[in-house]
Length: 262
Image (cartoon, rainbow, N blue to C red; front, side, top):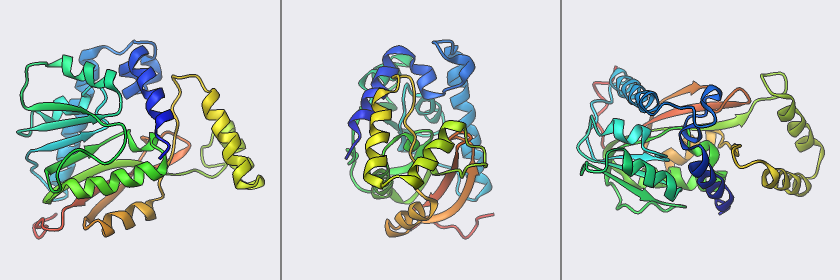
């Protein structure tokens, strides 16, 4: 599973501009994120997510919780204010080290370096799983396996919320010029030639750039069904940027009572 290149670039970002690596606001590039504003943005994301769960009849949430792709703990520490136990998982040892330093003496929060699936947790362990801005940077075979792992470690009455890019937009739907050219080459060239050129392009990019991938919505929904989850709600968002469609998926474990859902 080709995750080593992604992990290497993520570790390089962790060493040079970690907060921007997690939330890539162009105005904050070059270590211009104020830590308090950065972590406040995580608290707002978690607040909005928990409110959305309430609106869908899925809340409130309890621990233990998982923050997959935790980076420096922006969402992990915010979740700790709402549940009894939180585990943050990330592929970068440097990100995990920085996450631990934020509040080093809090026993409710544990961080783990996991460079590829499977996740180091028993089946049905988590009551709540959250993943934002992460799967879209993982090659599709690994991302699909991660989603299956989410369903394996989700408690029967648990809740899973994750964001994933789906498909690049067609030319004329907001693509940049470079994405339009990539789309055109993909149509014109034999797939092995296109894949070779794309791999060379990714290898030559500067380390601060992100590799983007997507898993089609229909594929994600099929994985959820096969994994025993119940897809409660899907909403489009803009997390993947203007060149991609992106969705947040709200999934209930198979034993969760949804009879009171709004």
